[in-house]
Image (cartoon, rainbow, N blue to C red; front, side):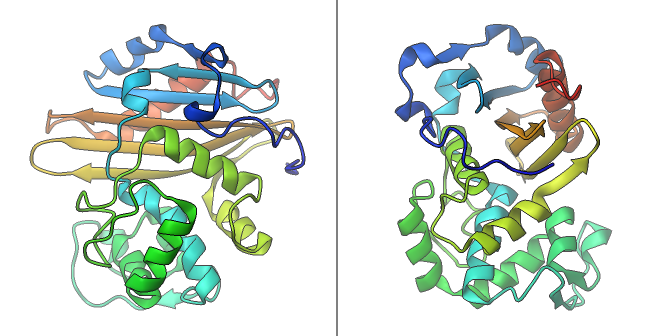
Amino acid sequence: MKRFGWMLLAIGLSLAACAPNNVKEEKNWEQYFAQYKVEGTFMLFNNSQGEFKVYNLERAKKRFQPASTFKIFNALVGIHTGAIKDTGMVIPWDGVTRKFPSWNQDLTMAQAFRLSAVPYFQEIARRIGQPTMQLWLDSIKYGNMKISRIDTFWLDNSLLISPDEELGFVKKLYFDQLPFAKTTMKTVRDVMLMEKTPKYELSYKTGMDNNDVQKLGWIVGWIEENRHPTFFVLNIQTDNPQIDIPKVRMEILRNILTEAGYFKGEM
């Protein structure tokens, strides 16, 4: 599907930019979180209709570590600075065996993005360097803009961002409103495309923090039907170690989007 980035650029990018009557709280979406006994928030912004729906508005304004959703930002800066030459750029496996077997191999940028391979993007961050990374965090005002160690700051609760801020960020990415070359932003959008059918295109990046106390899960992106984008952010959390975060977050996303009328090619 072709994008139509010229449409409706004036619509607010975040809750802070929207009048209260533009935001509809969807309390019935609680059922999808209760089904899996997780806390969370879901934001859905239909750009063509200017319709903004949110479940758990309070949580939507709270900041959390971005985890692997930061790979979107990391990829943009990496391509812009030349740390990433192109999506086919290979970083050889360092020989360290990690818990995800798919990470234990040479990977291209596109493969690493889809597999959410942390070691690849840690190396990209090191190549970018802390001063340059800090410059871009400050320029874009990404979350609280804090760096601890250059290769862990998005994973160790130094860098924090709210679901509301994530929504504004991916919306700006879609409409070429970030301070990067359009070719750079298109490259990142292309690697975010996870599903393409005749009825819809689903683009997103996941994230997860799997610590000993709380398990955090993200999905940020958009669904496009008939060249009309709708932006979404899902954020969930649980202290139940048995919860399968990757499975649960995707099922919640699909359940809510299905209830809202998506996946039919009619939006």
